[in-house]
Image (tube, rainbow over all chains, first blue to last red):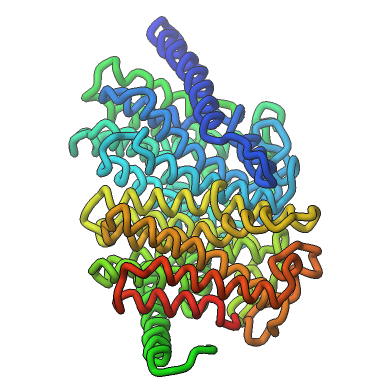
Length: 306
Length: 306
């Protein structure tokens, strides 16, 4: 963290506590959602548990719960919706790590699912987490109101399909054989990373039944941090070390992919990320201190080292 | 078909027409749902279209629409829900065909998606079809009632996840290294194939707002045809030829998997499938001629050669 002063210190404490709490609560949710069956499905559920419990920063669930809390949504509801979006995020990591995709051996500092288990189990564990996300959202425990639940399904479905995350991943695969300009890389990242980060904020707003004006501001916030998040990822890939990142780094350059860093240079990319964070925070001006966690999260997203 | 007589002839005509109509309508639905984007996502959507348009018998959509029609559901609603369940079925075929899973070159008589495109595109196309299924169900075009829509999501989600299809697929992978007895093979197939066939009937019943008694009968019907369907699949794998099956055959024996045919012998397996079909049809006794399509479908499921 580059902040100083007592207000920033309070924000850091709030953020640090929130990161601990979200990890504890999301782990507990998956532990309940994924009892290991006493039959040949055990290996599948063990692979799912291996992937979703104990790893990751839980940025998406935290964005979701922080937004929901602004509007007084109960913790249990928000955590369930947070587990749904995290299940989608983690399934996408499992599949992206496969040998036929990025062929990664390390994720969150431990062997990837296809390394710890096998490829077929990794494909299936990703598929089963994908289905689990929608099962969670269909359950009345997430909200007693069916319209709220179906809105959550719609937001998560469109953010993760060909018009969102999967489409961005396809563009990313094409990036190695193409020379993408800045608008194309921006569009790619808005789909690949931004769509799901945006869905996290949107789903929090859906749970909170946020009126139209509030949603527009929150969408602006989400759009800006989505792009900032990806620039930060590119900087980590460019400058980070594998030990702190918990995954292989320097891969984009090897693959010949255009990134924000290759197109802008590291310094301008970093400036751009910080400007986006400032802009994201300016979208929260109608909120008081109750939005401090969202503000701190925006800063954390560009200052993190993994 | 082994039936004779004019009534069976009428049923055959009804079935033949319905198979043509469902293929036309499901193809048209996917054509509308999957416009090819003018950017690097085009290859992904082309792979999705390659997989879902023009192939397959559309058994699940037909079960769904036939059940829905019993209760006066409009064709457009039923076709949309049918496209959702077909999207799940096809994504599972794409992933099952991958080199790390069954490593199949042929599906519906044409190269599998990873053969026609590449492995990474096949993984992503499956994932994007998986998300599309839930996007379709979240859309108010499938039903104006949010409770109906979320019930559809719940039924499809639980049928396809680790407690359903994906769990059955995991058990199937373990089958090559284990010696499964008949109850275990039955359980495996109830999950791998039966869960989604059951969901097709259930989703038709949800759209039709079928009362509890009717649902119990329809579930009995679905359970019996689900098992009969898999026995028929085992018989096709055991006795069929690749040309009419449109895929490789004889694979279970090579893989050392226990099937209904290896456990019961072909003749007893065939008898069992026919007995299940009779039992399935007996569950429809409270319906008149309006259920003739479901009756004909039950027979078709065991008499087909692919």
